[in-house]
Length: 303
Image (cartoon, rainbow, N blue to C red):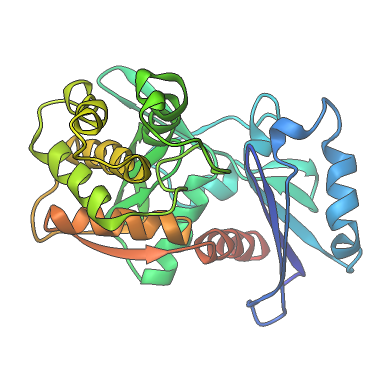
């Protein structure tokens, strides 16, 4: 197989992996050069600065997943409609440099007449399928915009986006609740980036699961604080539990089922903890899912 460089070019960060000849990751790099930080026309220069030495290898192939294919990215890549598997993804690669640098298309689906989209998460799901030796299942990719993905026969059939992390950030920073919570530390804009107080988090999840709506349950952050039943230091974890619990409540999960959770270790662990309250098991995977997915796509190009 040709020397492979795999990139995950997100909104806020840029990660890369260089593969060894045996298919294992030989080296990884990470930079704060997400797509939003790149000026128009600046993608080639950023790419060359951070990965030009890797691309100097004879016959090197680079595959890029994520927001590099968006309207504000390096090269806008049309979404691939669901259902989609490795074959459809490989056929719809957008070549920045023919035979050398390609962007993996995101996916689109439509539910109840409303479109939904993803960029980058599809590669994680395909990698997770290979790592778990699965053909069917439910996959959860938590974050600022969580994705719930249904896979059948090795193909993504449908998915749903839930703005859990973004709602957490909005409530944490811009609502009346911000006056109740402690001053914000350096944290990412999602529901899993704060240091976790287990008891407060579990209480938030439990209330969300038995409640009717986040519009009602979230006011408890303020009311419990007013009656000194929630300490300010517990507030962020409690709020995190509320929004993640609301996400799980909306999915109508069957007790005894199992999902695969893919993402940052701290965040996937938090989801596994919340899922346990629903009686649902969780298999957690990290960055290796992205690299495995891109490696599998590259293998199909070579073939």
